[in-house]
Amino acid sequence: MKRILTYLFGAFCMVTMLTILNACSDDEDSILTRADGVVASAAFDMEPPTDV
Image (cartoon, rainbow, N blue to C red):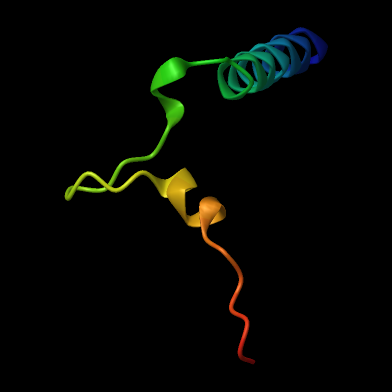
């Protein structure tokens, strides 16, 4: 029983590490683009409204 729990814990750790490493990768393709070609980061370049 102890051996089975050890294997399960090891598998859980490996899956967790693979998930973390995949999430932290620096991909150039990670910029979100809509179907009409608008880049998601373009929303951060907008000027704030002046008449509130």
